[in-house]
Image 1 (cartoon, rainbow, N blue to C red):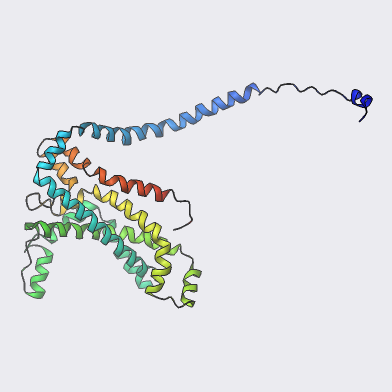
Image 2 (cartoon, rainbow, N blue to C red):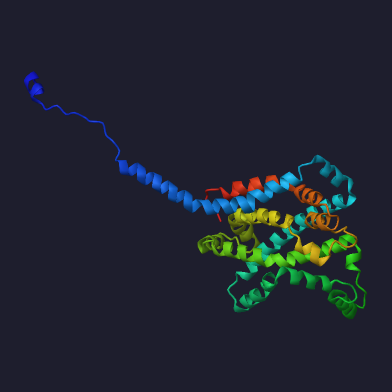
Length: 303
């Protein structure tokens, strides 16, 4: 381009751009509305989640409480009972629920009828169910000992006169009550597996147990792990089972930490010791919570 043409070219002035005044007002207005809608949720979270936890930590903050707990043989027994109750109860329950979900997925009408009756323990209120379970094992007046006497001519044991028998009854009642719920969860997971995968495995010769090991379980592994972790968290705080089935018999030796904390608070009138007993299991729960959070944050499209 020549110098004359360059001189004749119009000069374009770029003026500084200004945001419309209404946009910043609308942004502030939107933030205020967002905060107004969010405030009730934050208030409920602070009132019913953060405040109780902080209050419990404040009550049980004295190190001397935990020294008192360790010196109490009942606390050590309850701690061992809690670990056994959670470890055996959760693992047996989840494993049986996974196996039974494979039974109830079969498309036969009589299996659907059995599923209806199988879900009844889950539908029954927990307190009434556990009280009924207690009377079934009450001794010679209970259903279990009466059946053993009529069918086999033997007298059953005094279930609640032994720590281990009482704890075993507690675990059995816990599994009976909550296994149907997790069976339905695993049943839904099995239904979500594409049928083409099973068909391909059948063509390759993987049938029955081999198909379960190499196809079904790997697809349900993430669901199984998450459900197990959730069940551990819920079972640690389970109060109803032990309190209404064995009631800690004999002489509080089958208590778990949830029921022992209750006894410390009301029977011994020592609420700070009761809170400390319940919170003493918290360090063992931290790895479970962290692992659960990591599994829930998984972005893979796995069941």
